[in-house]
Image 1 (cartoon, helix red, strand yellow):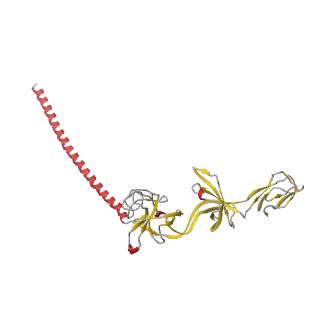
Image 2 (cartoon, rainbow, N blue to C red):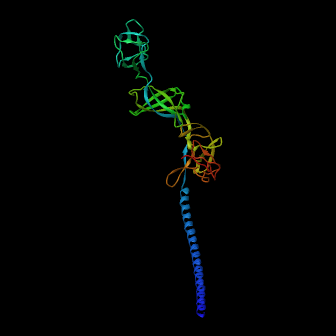
Image 3 (cartoon, helix red, strand yellow):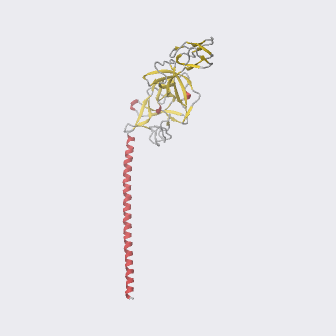
Length: 358
């Protein structure tokens, strides 16, 4: 009995000691783990702060070296043009058909003969009206001979006018409204890279052809002097839809829009001044690069563009991103023709939040 009681007391004592040891180890381990967690947090904060500081300095550096680009108001010519690709074809190319029925008495022409409109080509034994040329040109085929019997409206050959040529181009629906008969055009051909041909718009299609949801329209341009151009040759056509001579103009990206008002930023040039003023302008036509200034500016004035040059000599749109970096002055705005735009902004023109196509 005594031995059993002693054994139980021993086991109980051992269990107590074991529990105390485990609790002590857990306590020590917990303290150690918490210590390492705090050390890790402190290290993360230090490293993260250092990286943020380095990155912010790296990002800010180019801004300090940015320079505003400027240009002068110039006087010259502006042409609004629409371009397209095409190929050379004959304006007059027709079948030769008979307006009479009878036996052929005589065929008066042969293939490759050049004829004028109304020339007799075929006569009949019974004196019926002869077959005549529908227009001037070259006989390219003739399927008839003396003694042949010809039916009414029968096609007996073909005639093509190689002197009166045209090029046919396809024009996008966004541009077709500006194309009118009588407008002038410049034509180049791959076969004659050093030559430019003149032309005139003679026809504009009234119906378009839709491809992938976009409609295009056929435009015919007659060549003034085809020279050595041949039917089927590839061409590039530039049609002038509007033009003005001796007008003031600036690059289109220098004009900003604020509501219904258009303005530019004028850079003072006297006494090395860096002062700027906001000048309201009236604009006219543009050729996607330059825009006419109808009023508000004078030739030779210095205006700012809506782009900057950073330390890497890379041009950037001034209004990309959110706010802040605007031209000295006040107010926001946007640049016309899909260029960088801005709303209300930081301390400067066109300096607010906005985006643009660069």
